[in-house]
Structures are given as structure tokens and as C-alpha cells.
Amino acid sequence: ARFHNGGRIKFGPDEKLYITTGDAQVPTLSQDLNSLAGKILRINPDGSIPHDNPFEDSMIFAYGLRNPQGLSWNPRTGDLYASDHGPSSQDEINRILPGKNYGWPIVTCTESDPRFEDPISCYSQFTLAPSGISFLPWDNLKETSLFVAGLRGNMVLRIDLDEEGDFIKEEVI
Image 1 (cartoon, rainbow, N blue to C red):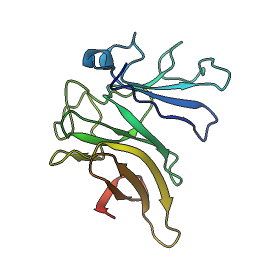
Image 2: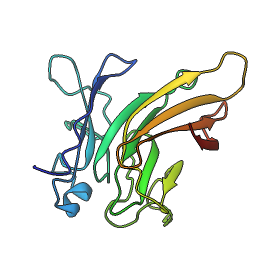
Image 3: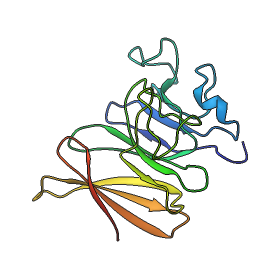
Image 4: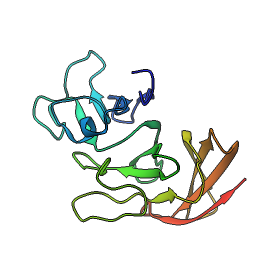
């Protein structure tokens, strides 16, 4: 699609290839498990589907995303995190769990529904347009820091996470 095409591709610590895809400006595709749009996909380096993916015979690892553009793994917990563009703000940072639904287009950012995973951080007051994300552990602290590049806001955010990978605080740097 011309817009909302995601586009981040990274090998994870499990040596699998992770691929983000946007909703291609058709929001309902994010909830459709027969579509690859609005998803995080996981494949083997040879292109085959890993036997331990959450959906049988499917590349889909997680779904319900709008336009995910950043992927990074927490060096302490091994958890996957992704940045996701929201509609006119409502941008999110999510901890990505296998087989989980992140709610787009049914819920966004500050809305909560027990059927969907809540973001660890959300930006509803301004448009961040989060892109690349990366972890940097501080050896002398219990926290781990996730750095988020904002395309729209021309900024970098630092999000501190506790030992379990949960949000502590954030600041613009």
C-alpha cells in the first residue's frame, strides 16, 4: 500500500525473521487472521513458518496493529516491543506477546478493553509518529531504557522499564 505499510524487518534473538505490516489503509484487515495486513509476522530464515507460531500454519505472530514501524527486544526479559502509529496521535508502544490482539481499529491508545492488550505507553496529546526503537540497558540500574524515535515530533523519547519490562517513566531527550 502507499500508506500504512509498516516495513520493519529484523531477526530476533530466536533467529526468526520478524516483519511488521500496516493495515494498508483498510483498518478491518488488522483484525482479519486471513490477511497479513496490520500484523507482526514471524518466519524462519528460509521463509517457512515456525512450528511454534501462535496460529497453526500462519506467519502471524501478533495482530490488531495499525502501522507498526519499530521492533526491539528487551535485553533483560527477551520480550519484543513495537512502535505503532495511531490515527491523528494515539501512537503506541506495545509489548508484543505471541498470538495477542492489540485492538486496532476497535480500540486505540487510552481506551481499554479486556479482549485486547493495552500499550505500555501511549501518546494521545500529540502526534509522535514513532519509528525506530532500540533498547539500551544501564548496568548500574534496575531499569532498562527503550529509546523511541519520533518522526513527527523530531524527538527521541526514553522510556524506562522495570525488571519485568513494565513502564516506569519516560522523558524527551
